[in-house]
Length: 358
Image (cartoon, rainbow, N blue to C red; front, side, top):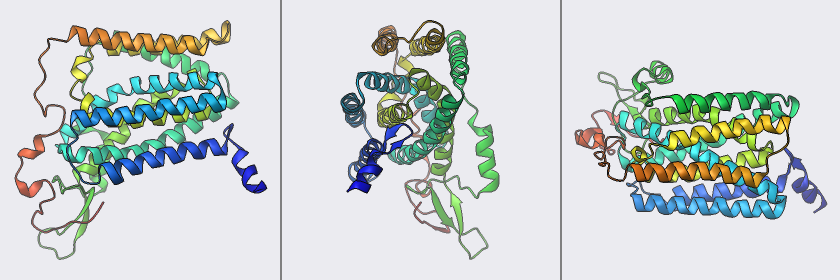
C-alpha cells in the first residue's frame, strides 16, 4: 500500500499521478461509451442527437472543472473553464474545414462519426506532444510566453482585418499528394473501412488499399494540428499548468466533435464569430504583457471577458442572420456520395474486392 500511495501521489508534470489517472479513466470511459455502446452501428447522426451528445460531453467537462476546484482550488478551476471555453471557440473554424473535407471526399453522413471518433485518438496524442513541448519551453525559457503573446496579437489582428476566409485547396494539399504517391488508394467508399484488400485486374494477389475514409482522417488530423498552433499558445497564455492545459483541451475537443453534426449546418450563421475570436486572441495576448509589466489579471475577470466577447459574437451573428436562407443540405455535409452507383458506396463490393477491417 505504501508503494502504491507513493506512486499515486508522485507529481507528474507538476500534478499528482492519481489526478492524471482519473482524467484518463474518464476520457477512455467516454470513448468506449461513444463507439462501443451508443454508435456501435454506423448511422447518420441527426441534429437532436448531436446536441444531446454535446450536452453530455459539456456536462462532464463542467463537472470535471468542479472536481478540479475541489482538488486544486478556485484559481485552477477558473483557468480550466477559461481554457475549456477558449479551445471550443477557437476550434469552431475547424468544424467548417472538417465539413469541407467530408464533402471533398463525398463521405456519407453515416460514416462521418467513425472518422471523427478515430480522429479524436490522434488529437489526444498530438496535443499531448505539443503541450508537453510547450510546457518544457515555458518552464525553462519563460520569455517564450512573450513570443506566444506576440503571436496571439498578430493572429488576432490578422483575423480581424481579413476579409472572406479562403477555402483550402484540398486537391493540391501536399500531405494528400504525398499519401497518394506512397500508398495505394481507391476512390471508392467500401463501407466503414479505412483499408481494404483489392485484387487489381490481371492479378491474383490481393493488395492493401487505403479508402477515402482514411484520406479524410489524415486531412482532419492535419487540420487539427494547424489549428492547435493557435489554440495551444492561447491556453498557455492563460495558465502554464500542463494538467489544466491538457485536460481543458481534450474535454473541449471531445464536445466539439460530438457537436459537429449540428454545428456544420449552422456555420453560415456565425458571421461575427470570427471578430469575437480575434478580440479574444488580442485580449489573451495583451494579458501576457500586462502580467509582465503590471501584474496578473484575475482569473475570474479573464473568464468573464472571454465569455462576454464570445457570447456577444454568437448572439449578434444569430440576430443578424435570422432571416438568411439555409444552404442546401449536402453542400458542406458531404452527402454527394450517396448519388453514386451502389457498387461504390456503403460497403457494396466492387469487382475484385475483398474487404478487410480497418
